[in-house]
Image (tube, rainbow, N blue to C red):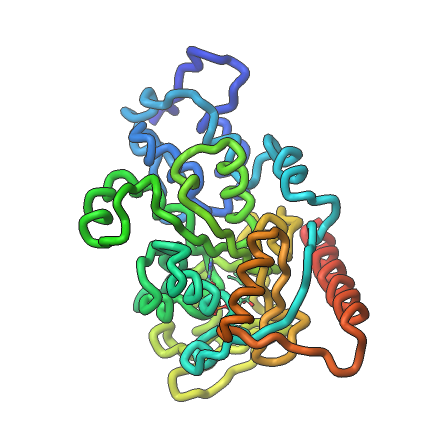
Length: 374
Ligand SMILES: Cc1cc2nc3c(=O)[nH]c(=O)nc-3n(C[C@H](O)[C@H](O)[C@H](O)COP(=O)(O)OP(=O)(O)OC[C@H]3O[C@@H](n4cnc5c(N)ncnc54)[C@H](O)[C@@H]3O)c2cc1C
C-alpha cells in the first residue's frame, strides 16, 4: 500500500500529525496520553483516532481532513515546542520542579484507607472537591475485568472508590475528553448540576507526561482542557506495557489478572491475589515490559501538577504530597481543617530537616531515572 501523505498547503513550516507520527509515534516515544486525539476529535475534524495505545489517521480517506493547524504536534508532551513556556509558567528550574510545600498525610476515611494505594490522598482530595461542590467531574483510571486500565470521567464521589489504587500500565487519561462535546447533551441531561458543558469543572489525575500535555493545552487555552480546574500528578518512575506486564506476572505468580487484588512497587514488585497472598518479585524482572517512552522521560515527581502524590519517602500508609501552586496549597489546607486527611508530623527531626531530606530523595530518584534512561 502506498503511503498517503497530507498536502502541506498552508504553512509549510508548521509541523503536523504526519510529523508527530514520524518523530514520536513510529519511534516509540508516544506515551499514549491521548492529547492529540482528544484535541482533534473534540474539534470535530475527523482526522485521527486512538487504536489501542497508538494515535493514527482514522483511514487514508481522512488524511486530507487534517487542517494542518499543528496543534497535535505542539501539545504532545514528548515534543519540544512550548516546553520553555510551561517551564516558565510553573516556575520549573530544576529536575524536581517548583515546590511550595511538602507534607506526608493519610486519609481519615476507613474505606479509602483499605483501597487507596498509599495514603489514599488522591481519592480523598477528590472526595473533598465533590463534597464541597468545587468540581462536577473527575478524570480517573479504573480497571476492567482483565485489569486493563480504563480512563473514565466520573461525576460523583461514590464512583471514586473504583478508581483508587495504582494501575501499572497506560491509562490514556486525556482521551475521554475527546467526547466532551459529542456527549454534552447527555451529560447536561443526566447531571443536573451541569447546565453548560463549557462550565463543567473537572479534576484530572495523571502521570507526569499526561500532566505535561494538559499544561501545554492550557497554555494555548484550547478546548477541551479549559474545563480542567485541578491537576493531580502521580510520581512515576516507569510504566509498563499491559500485555507484557501480565505475561510476566503470570510467569512469576501463575495468577490470572482477574485473581489479582493489588499491585505495588516498593523497591520490588508486590502482587497480592484475592486470597491476600502476597508475591514479592524483583523489579528487574519486569524491565522488558517497561514502555519505551519512559526511557525518554526526565520527570519523576509530576512537575506540572497543582499537587503531586507518591509513596516514595512516606511512612507506611501515608502519601507524600508535593504542593506546587496556591490552588493546591489551599485545597490541602482546607481538607486538613475539614478533617478529611491527617498530616504526618515527623518526630525525630525538625520539619525543615525533614522537608530537606525529602527534596534530596526526590532529586536522587529523578536523577536515577534520567541516568537509567540514558
Ligand atoms: C505507572 C505508575 C508508576 C508509579 N510509580 C511510582 C514510584 O515509582 N514512586 C512513587 O512514590 N509513586 C509512584 N506512583 C504513584 C503511587 O503509586 C500512587 O499513585 C500515589 O502515591 C498516590 O497514592 P494515593 O494512595 O494517594 O492514591 P489513591 O487514592 O489510591 O488514588 C490513585 C489515583 O491514581 C489514578 N491512577 C491509577 N493508575 C493510573 C494510571 N496508570 N494512569 C493514570 N492515573 C492512574 C487513579 O485513577 C486514582 O485516582 C506511580 C503511579 C503510577 C500510575
